[in-house]
Length: 217
Image (tube, rainbow, N blue to C red; front, top):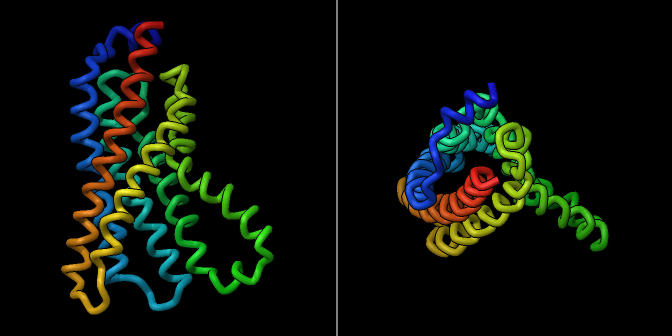
């Protein structure tokens, strides 16, 4: 079975792979980000717990779109990749990332009362888990097909550092009180496209190197 899958795998052409990955993952992540963007503007309940729940679900939808896009590209070079497993894992990792990312603001009244040392002790591992959440969720499926897939977790974390850094550099300065919902969404989507592009570029470079290393092994 493994020999058959290896025979079906398309050879990795780094530039072509990177272009396909960049285009599909940028598109998938951008489309997926529409879910939390729309929820944030139109659907959120006024209570904080409701907002956290809604956006966590929307984050799972975002992860589903991105996971499908990634799997679409990976399936050509990793025929043994299970698309459903990869997609579900990506959705779960994205939901966890949203849950962790929103918790500080949602529960600010509680954690700000903690001693600074305790805040730091919780914040650092939480931030690391947020950045690694998607890569960690995907890794068990990836390692079935890619022996050196553990590096994907670190590469994915770096990619999300880049992507989130771009988003927060663009969107918050442009968002102003009193803007109509369509303007808020338009700014968010524009920033999301840039975020997705940055993330897709870095993850594409990382995945390309992992696939090339597998072929040369």
